[in-house]
Amino acid sequence: MKLPIRQGIVAATLSAIAVTGLAAAPAAHAGNILCSSDTTTSKYFASCNRFVNSNGSVSVSANVHRYNPTSASNASTYFRATGREVHVRNNLVETSSTQHTVTWYSPNGTANRVYNGHLKPGESKVVKLSIPKGVKVRVATYSSLTGGASNTRGKA
Image (cartoon, rainbow, N blue to C red; front, side):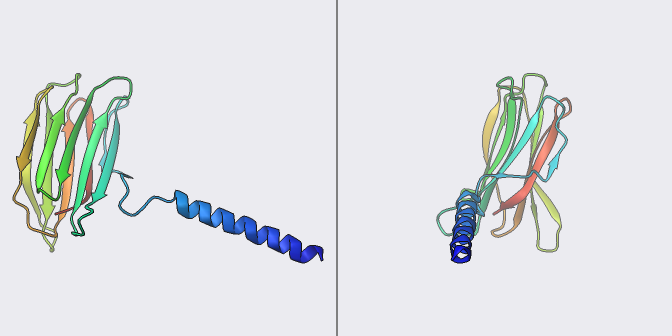
C-alpha cells in the first residue's frame, strides 16, 4: 500500500516541477538574449534583446545596449523591424563619440552595411533604412574607450 502512495507523491512532485519549469521558461520571442559579440570594458555591460512583432509578420526587431550600472551612462542601437528604421543614442560621459552600425545579410551571406553613424555624447536620432524584407539584420554599438557589442538576431 505504501508503494502506490509513494509513486503518487513522486509523480505529483515531478509534474509540479515540469509545470513550474514551463511557466518560468522564456518565450522564443522574449527580450534578453546573449549578445553576438561583447568587448565592453570592465565597468560597462552589454545587453541584447530581440522582439518578435505581434502583427503576425516574420520581422524581428533587435537592439544592443551598453551601460554602466553605477551611472546613467549608456549607448544603444535599436533596429525597429516594422518601420525598418534605426534608433541610435549616445549618453556615454566617458567618451567623445560612439559608432552605431546596421548591417543586413543577403541569403548567400554577403554583408550590406546600411547605417554607419557617429554620435557625440547627448545625441540621438532616428533614421529610416532601405532593407529587403526577410533578411537577417545585425546591430552594433562601439566606442574606443568603452568597447562594443553586437546583436545578429534581427530580421527585416
